[in-house]
Length: 213
Image 1 (cartoon, one colour):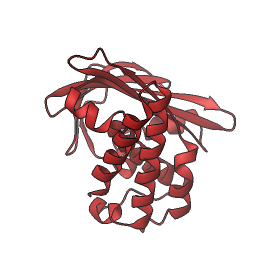
Image 2 (tube, rainbow, N blue to C red):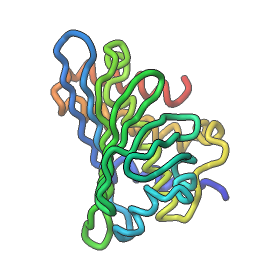
Image 3 (tube, rainbow, N blue to C red):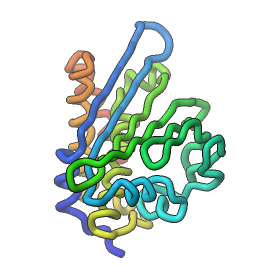
């Protein structure tokens, strides 16, 4: 199926609410939290199923292997591994997120919101200082923005994520989305108390990274 979602991608940066938290002691690792929230035109049961069902996850996110139950271990294909630490279906789950020697956590909540259902995803933990100083909260934030774009395409248009991710990233739609997302994360980083010049530079480097430039 063609991943033709220009209008959705153009609207998505405004549809998502982003909040960043940065706690920097000036030494060692830096605690960073990136939170995204968006309402989808479905109900809580369907949204919960979309973000927990191993048969649906590959359609908008990625294949996830393992035991998606409390205490179970999982592996996101070509990405992170982790454990299901807490689960209160169909409202909330908390997982560990282990990748490239680092460990953080991801919390997902689902709640009714008017005629739809609202997803809030928060990725938090310590960042290596050099990584934080280069990219800031947008490093994880833009990645999850792309995932929520896929979720929106799936729930709103019925389209699956592109099979050729590299080709999709090369499109003007994806390039514009990444640039807009990184700018929004820079805004959230400034709101978190990071000096604006630093936050904007982090946003520009994040956009360049995700754009392959």
